[in-house]
Each structure stands twice: as C-alpha cells, then as structure tokens.
Image: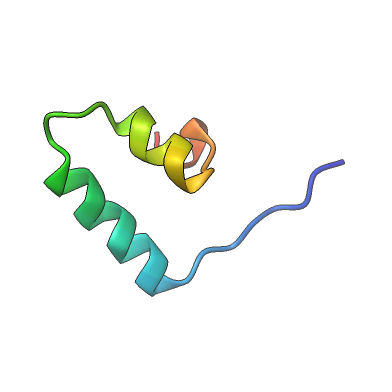
Length: 42
C-alpha cells in the first residue's frame, strides 16, 4: 500500500512556475524530473 504524499505550498508554486516556464516542453518531462505522478496534476 502506498503512502499519500503531501506537498508544501512553496513546492506547489515552484512546480506551477516550472510548468509556465517550460511551455515548450511537455509537462510530463517536469513531472518525471521531480518524481511526481502524472495523475497528481491532471
């Protein structure tokens, strides 16, 4: 059974900024880099 992760507001904000900055790259590349499941943001 997997443990549910929680993310700080600062981390969430940095991920959103990263998604804005990397508009040319697919979001999955950033998620893979940060080891965040795709379903977390979709």
